Amino acid sequence: MFRTAHILGASFLFLIGQRFKRQTSDTAISWSSIPTYSYDGFDDFYNNLPYNCPLVGVELTETAIPLEAFKHPKRAVYLLGAEDHGLTQDALQRCHSLIKLRGTDSMNVAVAGSIVLYHRAVQVSSPC
Image (cartoon, rainbow, N blue to C red; front, side):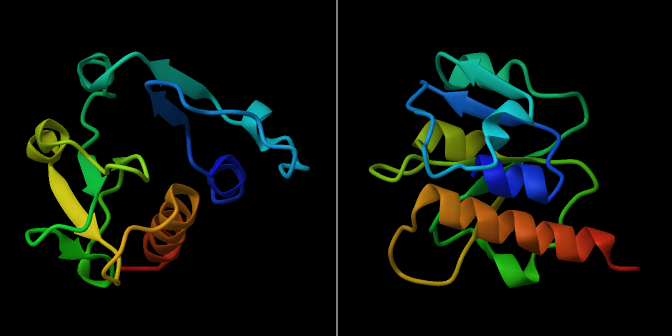
């Protein structure tokens, strides 16, 4: 996720309940090239969201908008759940928007995040 975020121009990354370990496969050492914030829990993260920056949750739910139909806001924070349990009910309720990727099963977080960031990069860079 660090490499994709760096390549596609994300402003920052964040971790909640730090489960990150540096990967030897990251030959670009991209984790050192993008600001990364770490929060102990969801409330700590939520209370420190950037001003005027909607929270977009990525989760397979009935109410989520399919990614291909979603219009990305000019500024946004994208929240992806852990692979083993997804987003909590509390997190889902606090998101300004929910989007989902095609499929019936959860994807690897880095893959799902990369797809969302690519979709955003293509859409935001395209003329209106």
